[in-house]
Length: 464
Image 1: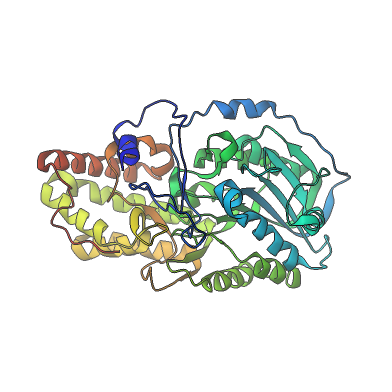
Image 2 (image 1 turned 120 degrees about the vertical axis):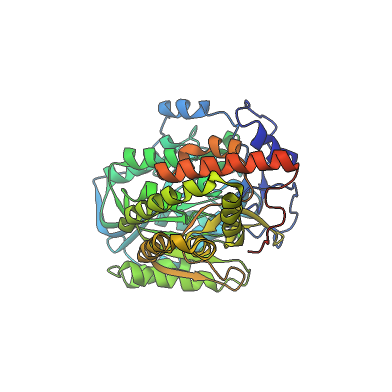
């Protein structure tokens, strides 16, 4: 609890060298608990200290690449799955990323590279062989796993020993490698690791849990110099408007989860075998195969969505219009409490490993519906936002633990203060009017908390 509130009140503090990560932490955690067993380690998410120094990013500009495998002319084909995996504690403690790669090997079978190729960049774990970033294709990975179920071959396509997987330089280098050596009709980029919504993802254990931030993700996509058909986030809490809006210029589709993910993540054997048999399948085809297989995991609290990213602009425009109407409501305390009721009643996301909830984000459709319920004057604008969001969501699945998960989330203000928002403003602002509204709302919340010496939510009903 002290770690969380220290970040909220001291959002400009310096480097923290004694940071200790905790697995299974969806959302913004306020309780320290280390999960000891694989059954407790149920969520693919992590809390991290934003005060970690960014100086390592500059060092990555001087990465030394050791190319040890044969790289010839451009390899051509139909479908390329490019996997960027920051192993972190998922790999160090449980070998879960190696399990993912093993599933890919099984799924691709004897499919030839001109039909389907898989290229993996892996690193970010303290496990031997996971330092820096290593690039290898699926045939090399299959041979490596056949030896002893670990990734430790000396011959790989490329190795960047000093890279941080949580940097734009490393991801950008991987994408540039693809651009140089591969020419495929369809390219899918899948990011695997820990995720914490708009605050960051893909934490590198070898670089003080350096996270890849949303601005860094965009920079890496720009470095790559090409667009992909699909960008997938096999991480917690990444199916949000904050994420979709920034990647919409670089991909046609996005697959991600609103809620925390089970530690096992996606079912790659299903996805890869489907694409091996159906290399020309539309997004709805491979998306449905993945979503349905993901839903079979018995752990509760699952969501997964396929988004059409060219609709993201309409959603952000609708959000901006609604936000302009919300700002005047904050002129009075009763107006604030009306909106607080709507936020507090909406579907929240941020499940922990023990099944408790720490709200990090909230469902965009549901919060729009709740606002319309508490203030019918806003129904036209809330309906417009709901309709735009539903056009963006092609497919969405969820289980009974999150009944009002409709595919896209947005920052939830129920457990943060204005200092926390200012710290992540670049990532969370989305639109000018939404930024102005959220800034004023949280300042009002802070003032009310100071007056009452309690929570501004006191007296309000609360449920997921």
